[in-house]
Image (cartoon, rainbow, N blue to C red):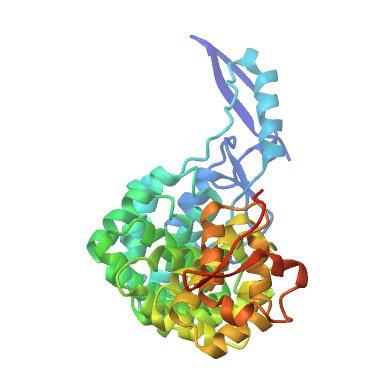
Length: 429
């Protein structure tokens, strides 16, 4: 078979004719490929030509092999072929061939708009549209954010997030997950349809698979970060239930951290602590703390428990759990200065507001008292020492003669003074 002929103008009134390697030509446009990409069938096309082919909505098969293409198929850049074509262009520069620049692979806004408009007119194509947007956002999200944003992709996807079809809802959440860096758009959506978006994400947490739940959790944290104070004070108990289920089910490491951070950010607002307790947060957090190994995860759990122990309901739930006091006490000195501080704060809340005789004795038996005595000897924050000292003041009458406190720590107790038993250290670090 004879090679294609290429006719180029070298300079005015002069023409140069020469052969072009056939594999340089796009099978669709029959022109030299500027940005060669390979589809799932193994055939390479110029990106612009194959995107137009796919975006038309009528063509779902490979133009060469006629095999079906995945609706959200990746277009894999063929960097080797592109470099060969560029080298060939350079060698033939004397014939007037210009070197093909390295492509930026910028998505065409008009193609995205066309795809979205078609999906709006033909509802049965919505899922297909979402899958294509997912492919664009997942592979090129940061690079092509301007095109996706300008085409109204965020608004369109958000409009489908409350779709009654589970598959459509889950893919919509996934696309928004990849586009969550478009903060200005998300903030506008939150001010307009915040409640609907949050409710839809909660439903995905409730009914979705592990991947969808992970994306929804991370997205929930992103939207709450952009929400106004009124929105921060109005989450439902169901939101706390499903967010804590993500932690309990260990959906993913990233999702668990996002859930814990969301809990930390929501608890200071309004009655959210009580809602979180009603949603089972305390029990889930204690169980997670029993298994947690990673430093930041432990810190986030202890911060959350500290916040929840700021209300009566939270303290009651921690004391109701058989391992509550024990695991909090165990984490003192085990994780970080921050974790130690939070653990002591939790014990302070319990000692000051919920210290029945049974609780005081439990603190002694699980080692909390011995740890508090050690806090007074080691290098830690002054406020942490003060809280430990206050706890020991409150209940020293019960603890001072107990065999559960190591003998070498008893020297840190003084006898009655002004009707109080004061615990101090003889030498400060």
